[in-house]
Amino acid sequence: MKNLHGGFTLIELIAVIAIIGLLSSLLIPEVSKFQDRARSVACMNNLRQIGVGVLGYVGDNNYEYPVIEPDPQNPVYPPANDSTDPDAGIAKPMLDVLSPYGVTEAVLKCPADLKSPDPYYTKTDPHTSYQWRVTLDSENATAPKYYGGRRGYTVRIVKPSRVTICTDYQNVHSGKMNRLYADGHVSVPN
Figure 1 (cartoon, rainbow, N blue to C red):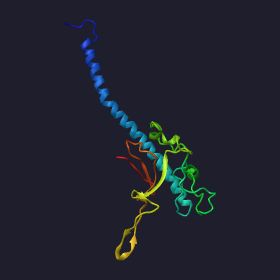
Figure 2 (tube, one colour):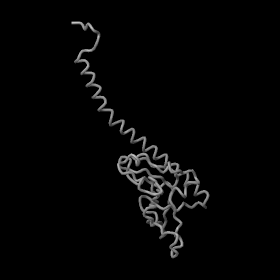
Figure 3 (cartoon, rainbow, N blue to C red):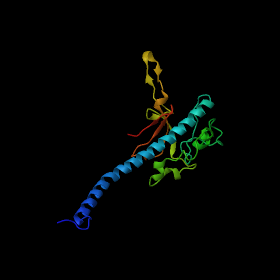
């Protein structure tokens, strides 16, 4: 029998709605993955900007890296009024050290951290989603191990591409952290 009104039958409408529902249930998780990846890429761009600022600082300061307080809320370095330590008061927050080199407060905001249920950005003062954490091959760079060389010499060749200088405070990129290395490159979480 022919359809006299030229419209869809009820069964055709139900089939179309079922197909649309099936396709949307397949696509929604993929869209979420794309959004997470976009936040990770924006974070990497922020870390690259921090890296450019660090390299500018290094060029202006006799090729020495800045001493940045890793956690201004719980300072690692002694305050300036501690007269027993000659290095007291040399560590400053990242924004204070790198702002002359183009690092702004907006650069210190990781989009994935801001979307997390408990953003670290709001806990730190000055606000930052990134931690200055110098490591060499995943070990603390303040006391690195030395590799033995020939004839009793102790040698460790350190390439800037192996020294991590800044990371996310939290594992907000699918359980991983983006890392900025001393040569300016940023690692991509797999």
